[in-house]
Image (tube, rainbow, N blue to C red; front, side, top):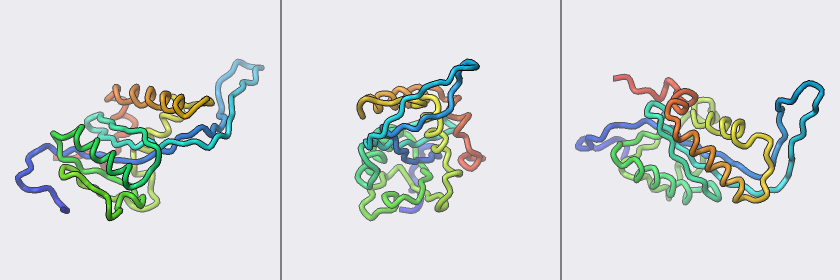
Length: 182
């Protein structure tokens, strides 16, 4: 179904969606230290990862996310169902990138969601990319995790903090192409 049914009178919510890979592979980054002191930062190379699926509606200050074990069609189906149920009072138009699972034949798009593909190889038009930067800079900066559970706990804390600040979401993820002009 390419368009919204005429009888559907729910308000339209414009969202952007993306997946971010987070793992126990750490890269030390610059940090502040007093003059003459060389800071130390932990580093590790353990190849364990999780995917964060996130959708943002910057105008409304809404952020929905799930931490999942991998990125594929089954996980995208799970995420779309979660978004659809969480925002059941809205008709959602969701910008997605060109990942294979976004246009898979087995993708099950709920009736209150329409997917719109962003141009290929253009992450700069997806505001969720700023969420990944914010998480890495403010919540995962120079940390080494003893387990994947510890990483997930830190990600949950960061996502919750961002999710509760609607002004912050609108500020750093409010792209002009996601605004509806009436």
